[in-house]
Amino acid sequence: MIDSEARSLTATHKSTGLTFVLILSALMAVTSLSTDIYLPAMPVMAKDLQGDAELTITGFLIGFCIAQLIWGPVSDHLGRRLPLFIGMGLFVTGSVGCALSTHIVQIVFWRVFQALGACTGPMLARAMIRDLFSRTRAAQMLSTLMIIMAIAPIAGPLLGGQMIKITSWHTIFWLLAIIGAVMLASLFWLPETLAEEQRVKASVSSAFRHYYSLLSNATFMRFTLCLTFYYVAAYAFITGSPFVYITYFGVDPQHYGWLFAVNIIGLMAVSMVNRRLVQRYPLEALLKLAVFVASLSAVVLAIATGLRFGGISLMVGAIFVFFSMNGIIAATSTACALDAVPNVAGSASALMGALQYGSGIVSSLLLALLNDGTPWTMSWIIALFTLASALMALTISVKK
Image 1 (tube, one colour):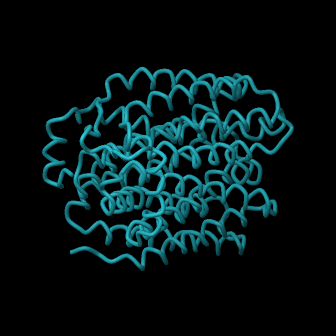
Image 2 (cartoon, helix red, strand yellow):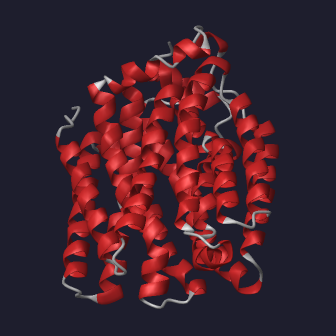
């Protein structure tokens, strides 16, 4: 096993330049782009497909979660590059299937298929960072990737809003297929980061037993659940905001993207600050602070919404603070969790990703089942699960 200093030295001399960072950032952005770009088109899709368009997000997240649990052990056994090539091929195929869909059942199926490949991007990008970098440096690198990848959730809704104005939602998925093909080609410039001697020698099937040891690892699970609960809240906004902003508050679909983008700008700014903070303060302390700030803003949002006070302006402000904290929460919790289990980074990253993005299933189902036609449902889900994240953060010990 390569120790922390050796990993940092290795990273310095390997292909970790601009091309490497850009490709990893794009791989991490595939997931958010796959959903965010068609958010403004969801009301139109629901009418055309004669069904609940939120199910397309649910289907994607189900496929995303299940597939990661398979790809994790496979990548620990075979390396990182081969699963990425297969994954991007599946993503392109699924995107084409979505573009050709004419019924809600068809597009949900192809969204699941699309997710089987999309999940390899962020999962293996995190694992590759862990392959190369030490704990603090990994958190810094993850913050860098988040700054770059944040372009996707900014550009996605803006681009989708303009596209739905001049063309059909089918074109959005054709564009995703093209982006997937470009990503597939870019993988030829990506180096393999898991050396042969570091790979799990046991069979892939036996490697699945690592999930039991990960689930029973208290340190790993504290950080993972802290991130998971936060993402239940984040996905409540991502899934519920098209209805709240466009239908309830009457925001034009092409302007919805700007309200969504302001949150990502906050995330980028906090991620830039976090690059410096991780060098000066313990990662656990930064995580606790960020979750506390997110919880405070979520409670304010819920109270204001419940009292019908402040309107859309207060909602945008509270969500901005809540979402910006992701710039610290995701980077620090991921770096700490993977540092606790360095020998199975692929499986650990897969389990984290499955729980993190699977949290969106909880959000979308709660919104679909309990929606009362007002922003209240989205707001109390955000507050409840952010507070759950804060409670989990309280159990984390700060390393000196």
